[in-house]
Image 1: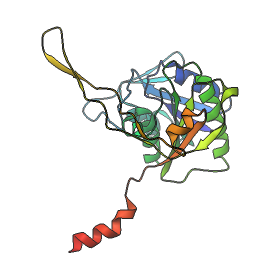
Image 2 (image 1 turned 90 degrees about the vertical axis):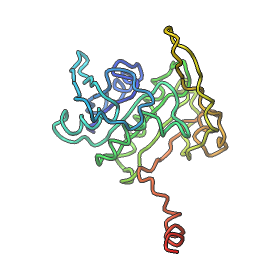
Image 3 (image 1 turned 60 degrees about the vertical axis):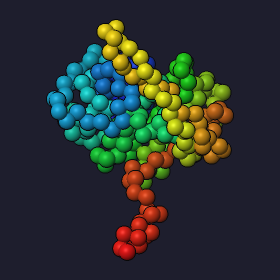
Length: 247
């Protein structure tokens, strides 16, 4: 299978290198990734400046843009023909619940789907990042299953894997997206010149994290696979909204 790979931690990230090493053992993989860490970039596109591309000794393409830029550029200019799949990751840190709204990792996969291709985003839960190889093996298994079970046209897969050795992984659970409480207040500080600055505070604590959610699966040692819809229309509200707008 021909695959385009990207991430949001940057072209030098360990998770990207590990994922490429594992997937390229069985598939034809091209890597197009940001030249720096773009965590939290979401679906941003660089519309007001040109993108610069550098081919690295590793064969990876380094791009002066966002994760979405990388996928868009890879599909429209770098690759001579479309791949069969876009894979984004492995992110250092989970993308669970509300995190998917801000995640550059998920955004790269979403851009692939907007460009008409099936896509997977994968993240490793935990701060230490010891077992990227576990997440890579899980993704390879999922990729090989997609041949017989292709994704629906309006969906991507958001995969989150516990940071444990592969043999200690309890299995894979198909989950729904959980939800966090409101984020903690921004932190007020002062720079060396006496100017007031603000830092983002910690993410909100888990609110909807019960059984069946992505939070619950990962916390209990399972890999979480959540199908995300790219079409964000709230179809259940269409009829009622038509009714009250017509009055």
